Length: 161
Figure 1 (cartoon, helix red, strand yellow):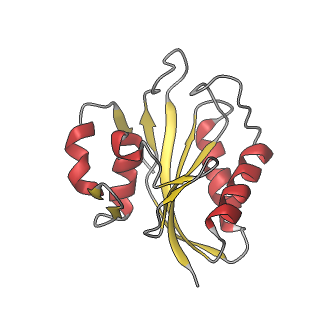
Figure 2 (tube, rainbow, N blue to C red):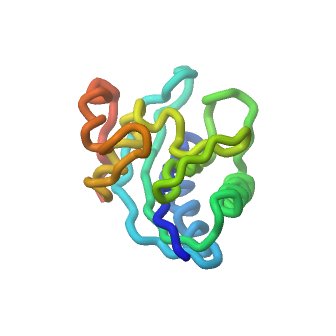
């Protein structure tokens, strides 16, 4: 049975807008998966490690029959194919794909935590998420749109299409 899933995308090196578009195209090619919606692209300031370029962020909604673990493996393979290197925590990257919501499931394992544990603290996830799914509920947090006020001070700029 298909599950409604949200994936947050981000990139800030090697033509980040192009990298996010490539990642979305590769997600569309996953077996038993179809793209339902894609948010606008947003330019956002880095979080944590600040000495790096701004990010291009977006969120996509997909329907998939892949398990959460199968999807995670596929997303890691896409990151690898697009040149992702994990040298500095929260550092510059060609692409970052985060499985933020997998239906209403709650998963807490070493390699996979869903909902993403910090998504409710990040405008670069919440704003594009509520753009495409204004009524989405984050298990354990409540309605995503109710969390927007807490991240309103974070730098975020919607890019023209």
